[in-house]
Image 1 (cartoon, rainbow, N blue to C red):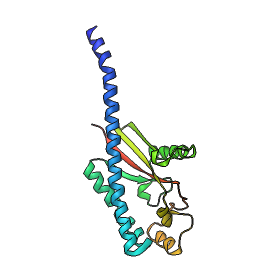
Image 2 (image 1 turned 135 degrees about the horizontal axis):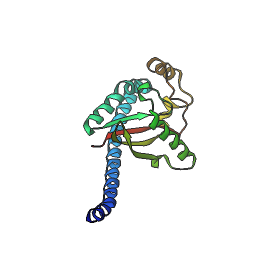
Image 3 (image 1 turned 30 degrees about the horizontal axis):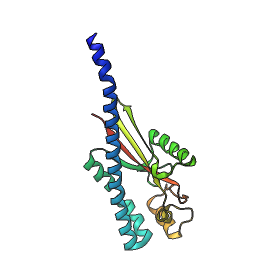
Image 4 (image 1 turned 120 degrees about the vertical axis):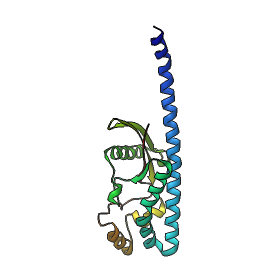
Length: 187
């Protein structure tokens, strides 16, 4: 009888600990995304200053995955970018990410601000608990230079050269360009 009472008392406590732990992982994920986004933005701005959009595309092509790898290694989990319309096939959404991205689009249509659109979940993958987190990336004015509806011919040519399967154009200001994605095994 004492064991049942003890279990009944500890069960709500474990739920609180789990919720606190998940909130902590969300905060850490947001920090990692901020670090990744800042480093990538700085590199892209340097490219724009050095050689305009052509250079920025080249920088994105060579630096984005390296920065993601460095931040992933530093933080101890995988950080990436994905979209429903990817430029780089290495960023193609997995089934979980696609479902979340579709949900993000619905949330945007219902009037939710992009800056507030995120989602986290602990899933079971191959008998391992895995924390997943995604945060929407808004399409800003500067993004339209390489991701917009009307691209300069030189940009289109450079994109075709580096990304022959490119789908990441046609965006408008305020669209969801994609999302940052965090995957973290829970020990």
